[in-house]
Image 1: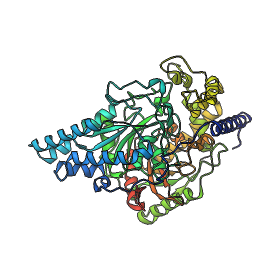
Image 2: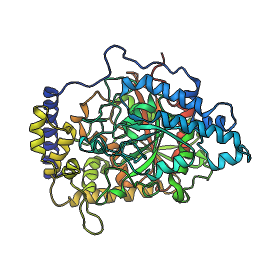
Image 3: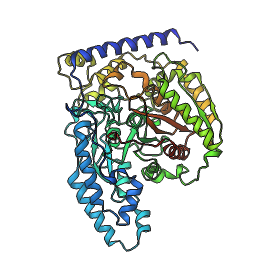
Image 4: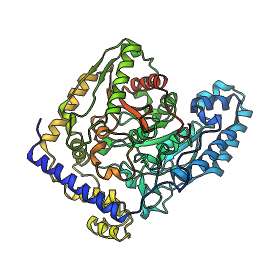
Length: 530
């Protein structure tokens, strides 16, 4: 289906604007990266760092290892890798050690036995990392905004509170892109975060700090949020697992920035972790009273599911073509499913995927039921004061005086160029795609879709191809659950992966597939290993 004349103009304007911004950035900005010298993370040395949260919790309850030992192992690892990654922006090591000591005393004094502890406190004594846009009591809560530098969370966001109530011990908060609205984790408050597999590469965003510290074995479980790929892209680039839940299941309260317009329909909070077996118990905890909306206790027989693969978006002019190695590894997943399970993986194509970026961009700007539009990005940039003038900020950026990143300024400029009325054609494409996908999947369908057109790009390169995150963003607009699964390392030693999606509220299906793919492809790999 050909693009309309208006859409061709929009594509041209987007490419021209991003090209200019990228050239300006390269001209005026210093490069990011790790300290000079070492170009690879130290390998993991403690066996405690190579256990899932589920296994660690079991060992702690059985007194085979103390919570203090586990927390100390992770403190040492964070101190070892964070100078290279810049992922953790603020730690709470002293408080974490105190809480670990209390856990060990509690276990010694427990008279009900291990089963009672497992039921009441399933993550007792296990370290946890938290994306800094989630409120964590007593910790910075600024989403990479210089103007929010002194803001400290007075409460816990509900998913964080539930994980703490389950016994998890927060170790600190991790870096995000400015206002959580970019696929590279960089801001002028905390700086740029690096990929643990290659310090010259991005860890993704906006949950890039989480992805980086998890991928670097400085954490075993963490929490992220996702309105356009902010869980899945960092998980892909850092070789870990992550789950974008069906919207409305896990609370998105007490996060910054706050969703407005219809954005809450597309935003999800979910688990990020190195080991697939931690996804389901984390989701069960984070969902709290809404866990009953999902069939998390239902046993899944993969042989009885219907599998589909969608190899690409159909050739959108706004996104990069999917690389050969990513298409090849997705084909390999399909082949292994057929060989191991005796199923048929059907290749399907929907032309509406070509408009993924336009659909995401359009629906992010729609008003809520009361007709109230989303908070303008320039207003969020000016928080807690007046709205920002993006042209003025661009001029300030040229002389190194702006508190805002080039990406944030670029998004604000693009917002100014938006048409007031959404395209009826794009609305039609989304509605048609929604109907087709819902009918295709039902309650027993699972699909494979590329996570991104390429492996983790070098720092700042997303400025040149900002629409590539349409591969994740379109799934948000469809309201489907998706699990991001690592599939080993590619030609450049960078993580490969794939999105595994299912019908609404069928999260348990994709979580089961994640377990299979971890067993089949090996899961997370130590970036410091030879």
